[in-house]
Length: 356
Ligand SMILES: *Cc1c(COP(=O)(O)O)cnc(C)c1O
Image 1 (spheres, rainbow, N blue to C red):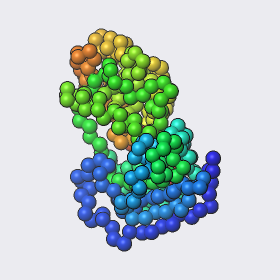
Image 2 (cartoon, protein in one colour):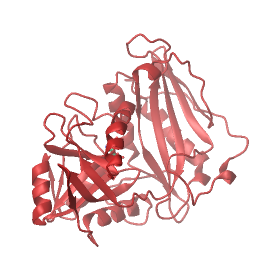
Image 3 (cartoon, rainbow, N blue to C red):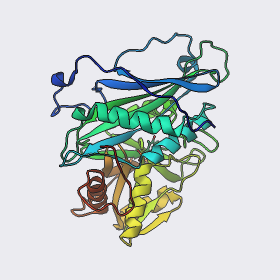
């Protein structure tokens, strides 16, 4: 793997900023993009011409492999501005390692560490005005890679484009989240691509999620593909169950996305002397816990919403409500995580990464 390069990033600044047209109090998640984007091409066996340019459309041949075979991976991370105007990332090394892990699974070339970090920090600094301080505010960062070689032959692309977009975000309120436990569809399977942030994983879950929505649920809790016996992820998030005072979550495998939020919640819980069990969590034990009152909380964990509390679940067409916990684990981890992210508290694990 070529992990380092001496290439300089070419910077072409936007002549005028679009920031004045943006209502920062009314943002729809991921739909407004800041002034600049990063682009780098892979050709002749190497990454070349790294450039930051004004955000705008691309010209790509309709014959490019990504459109035919979905050879694409992505990442999601955030930059935060603290009350003194300093800018921070949260565990960006994890996203760097993961995008390359995803790329390897999709037969795509890994991206060099030094250009990744230089692109990320240069882009965030250039568009720092797009990051608002205050609780819930952040700049969502979307690195992605796609196969751009022209040709519909079913083989890996020999050319790729690596890009980073950034998008201002406010607190992501999910409201009351009711979930349906999957009994037919699956998100991932043994030996599949579930552990990669492959674009197609999301495409494939839209249809079953729509079916659940029609029945009044916001999300699906994915179960193992073979027997639908074990609870694996919730929507596009990792999932935690609190039974009495023990925290349960599925172990990392090739069916589970190794979430940064998930591993951060586990670290915080262990530090706080909460028992955490990373093991297969069966549907039957959670149904039983719901019946006998020991199921206290279910929550999703992921970068976009941080922690998203589940208020009810359905299994075999039966609904189970989860009583709202006033000072539950979900609220506590959300506060602990966002305090670290926004530089409002100690950073005992060294997770913050100073940009500016
Ligand atoms: C991105 C993602 C997550 C969450 O990962 P974070 O690093 O915490 O944002 C969980 N599950 C799936 C399927 C994902 O794609």
